[in-house]
Length: 115
Image 1 (cartoon, one colour):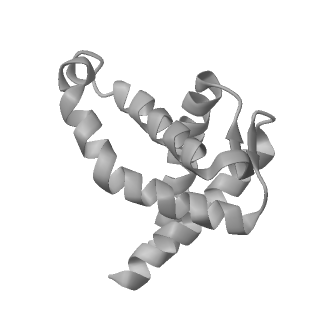
Image 2: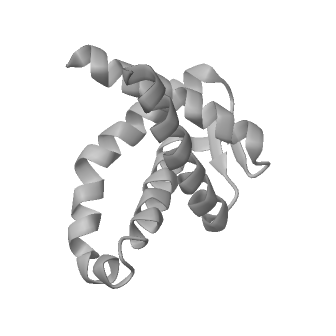
Image 3: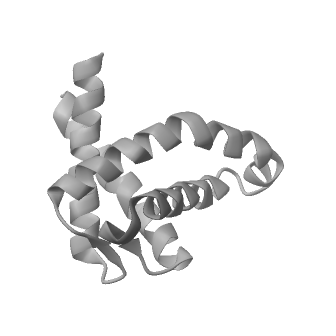
């Protein structure tokens, strides 16, 4: 179980580096920063994301689940706030687009890694 979590953290860090290369408004200082951001994001997804999902359940249902992208962007922005200047996102719009791209790349990398 620990190995699977570590693989997930590692793949998420790679995804964050890829997204940082794709967008000017998404900045990471290096792979170490990406690993720390990935760990923080993992903890936030475990602790904060379920609370946000429950609190926004009506709007999530009304948008057929698309509001989950906003929740993912919020967790990215919280991670950025915790990390300080080593991890910066220029705005909420960038965070939403980055959340979409991160979801797609993570899905692809996890499928490749688990097959």
